[in-house]
Length: 286
Image (cartoon, rainbow, N blue to C red):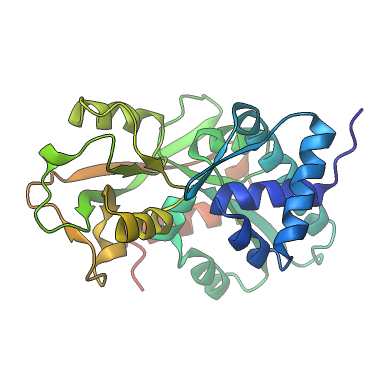
């Protein structure tokens, strides 16, 4: 049996998130040499390469991509375990998961709103790939999940809660949709079904030049190197270097909220769900 330090997995996840060894080192308060040493130790322990380095980009290997969901679950489970055993008796705990792109566009104010209304709450928020959130809710490592693709699972209660409005943006004023190609398209993961929508819209583009880990990484790329990316207008309204394509269609990406039927049998937990539904109706105004 292999023994893997949880900190090695944390480091792996941070590099996958930032796609940059230097930024990962800053976020973990370590030197870049220490980050590199941790990844080498993890690769040596598992006997597989985890990252491939390209110009201006770091990508997961196929083995690294397979490790990603397991590493995410192991780290999140360890965090929740250590926090759960320390929760004061008069406090309630709640774990909410969503893709980073959803947190950044619509849910960033959610934690503060919860703390304002539930002062005795220990809240854990998780930034997780949309494709594994339903499974996390089912295995009780997450209480409430937000995701792009609607899961078809009888044990889950699933509601559409809002849509993210997207349009194509570029660093060039004259760029039109017809000029989008494999050499300039930048994307982020917006769920499995959205890839099918995008392929119909851009049938001549089989893959992007760069799939970023989050909105800001994509914005930074097209600002520096050029390119085109689907973005929410709320993220670029104050950016004078990014322009909406004049012929861009408007695309709406639906977001769903899910939780187990068992979860809302508890009165306090039901109140959390009702609170979230009320916030969604009010469009999380603040």
